[in-house]
Image 1: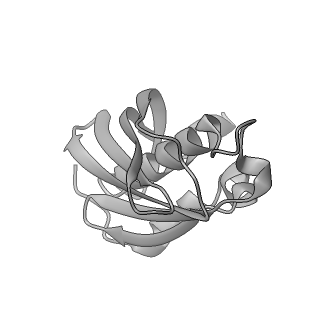
Image 2: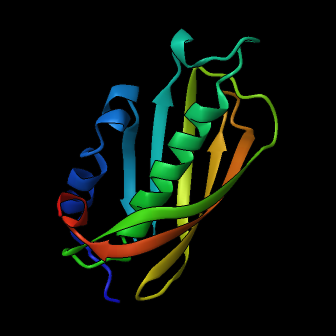
Length: 142
């Protein structure tokens, strides 16, 4: 599968997800087989003990992994998460989280990625492994 080197295309795909825009996830870097993001933490993103909610960590890592998957796709393709596992390694706190996802293996119909989330102190707070299905763009509009 020839990867797309059109990073503007990947940026457009990344922000098509309204939920991601509403959360405020920033796309900070797109490279060959990887994507990096960041997220400023607000009080609405915390759980009862003041740590970043697991759902926020999962969304950040999942969507960043999807962005990495797009780097291995053609322009007429997109990816859908079919499975992921996330491990919370320590309580996450802000003020800003960073995430980097990399393509581990890209096939014609499935892409496997891994994402690492770093907390405000720069320590790893979560790691996600993900399987993405490669599908035609527009499949959700059928």
